[in-house]
Image (tube, rainbow, N blue to C red; front, side):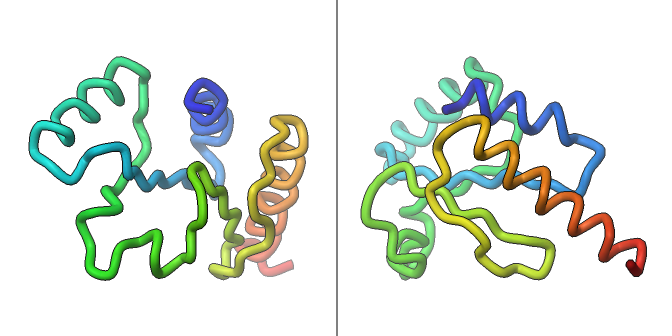
Length: 109
């Protein structure tokens, strides 16, 4: 998913769009965290990413994540509008709609 995520970040860099990651791939140790940071850098991950293990309760517990990856699409008001949209074209469609709604709201329309 990272290549597509990277393209979304680039495509909407000047729009009301934010991508946030939560990782649970062995980042609970300093060695695992260092490995993840190296991999993220090599893959071009430029967006904020949090460790699931860094909070109590874990982010995955609060959000009731049952499997990885779980995708949540929150609008400009913080409302979950979609979950687990995985098809790239469909993902871009729903994101474009949400970005347009955010821009209309910012313009007072």
